[in-house]
Image (cartoon, rainbow, N blue to C red; front, side, top):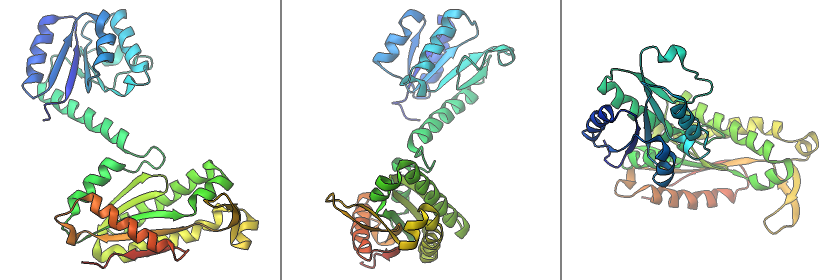
Length: 305
């Protein structure tokens, strides 16, 4: 249990609140107990907690208004709120207009409470980390996944799309978003169907997948083949026939832009047991730069020891 996790406990009954606070503190949580509802919002604004627990054994309009205010705030609505309720609460509570993230029935089962708190924190971490467009794990998960495989016979693969910016400029961001969703599905399915691994989305057109070295070339080939197969659906008929489209390069000059392709930089993690994920990213950037010079879809494996 991390001792820096902070819980705000909202309760009208000071005695019950004090007992619960002691149990939470015994697990390493920092607990702020609030019994005066008038000051709750101000204190939460000044020092946002990681979790809010509300004693709803006696439900009144003031307490429900407080919950609505907290969960209706665009910033604080993401803080998990767990309600402590009596046995009839679930059947009679207005779930549609009072937004609790979880609840436990009284009297409390403390092991269950501690489990629910952990699950709430893990859930919100996944929500914040996952890319909202592709639903794939984001930077924190990617970093952790790379650190986990350093020194092992695995391949860390960085992928991005050739000429994605001019495609966005010409065809629009909605089409660009669809390209990213399609590519995410292609990568995820290729990794899963090959036997499993990790797939993440750094952001934009940058993706990462991690697989065993003995499978990496087959998976890279599958990703490239499947992406190539759907390219024709991403352009209008005229551009498909020409094999290019007119767009602006980085100098602001109009030129013929090739149809989309992907490059994959493959960094074996076995030689990097004393390194960290930053070194992997550095090697991958060098490989991607070299791979892009071909002007077509390809993958490049780091062979340096």
